[in-house]
Length: 491
Image (cartoon, rainbow, N blue to C red):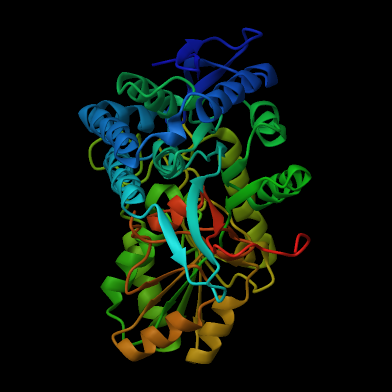
């Protein structure tokens, strides 16, 4: 396991020698220590990225050359997939099959953006038809510059890939700060990029506290673009700080996503997708469909089946065979989720199952998967993101009521609908005020498709071609081609 900062193609300790603990959430044991970057370290990283962009030629490379580096990084991730997945488990707590899936997706993300980097060579400019024949004009895409990327702890390597891959493909250079509680695999990404021969300064990774290293990235005048995934309050602060220098910003923030199930749905299929929508990754998913609305005709039967199946989920260390629910990521997160459950009960919600530490676990941040009923519509349990394996479920009568309840949220990241009536499912999907909508499923995510939300769930889109455009500026180049003099001042 690596412990130093990666700046300008070199490994180095923090400037003041400070480190912080890496804690395995399954055992609560300190398993490693990592350098805690200072503002001075971030300044060095930004200056290295600035030089790589302004002087060393990274943005001037043909897209096919940048693609070669991206594919080498993808290959490097795949060659160490099993090892990196295990690091993700001991750092984040998620079950090994989930971690393995994440690492494979991260490699695929680099491959996908390698292809888009090559396409930049094929479509370097767009001619513009002008009303004035004395001029020609074209629009060209250029990389923004130095990107400061700050990522969360729920998908450590995958979230790094979502930002680093499109930024490098576009020709940007990057300073990446992983979450303090899950930095191990981001440092392995640096090692893989180094082994791939990525030029110094193109990718820099600084670990440490958000209040120090993260803030230094946000405030640095050498950063042109801020890309953040995390909580709404932090996103709002980043947006306000970016306004001082008019930095480009993309924000992927929180959610409280609805899942509407109509009474013609197959109950077992619905229960499977409801569980996948909230218990995957211990519910620590921004798009988790944590508000479930079930039509009255099947509500009681579906609830009984959901509780029955939820109680069967195997809880334990993510490295154990058959475990489908690991510990929450940290003591702080564990305590916050427990407090949210207690607050829900105080507000009038009923715990249909779960809600406490499972038996037999004296250590580790383990929590039973939880189903809450009767949560008042104005309660935090129904309206605010809990970010844990906690589901609120309630009945509805009509399609109109379901849509109204689903959209009654300050968030708009994702939503899901389940029905055998395709016309109704499409109609409801169109009515959702959300950036990501699933029909007859919940949570599948594709590198090729846009990801991002409405309302307080963020600004901009990641993934697909939209993710690449996050890191590109559009320049107009117009040329006077007439042989006649302009003749405004000189006749």
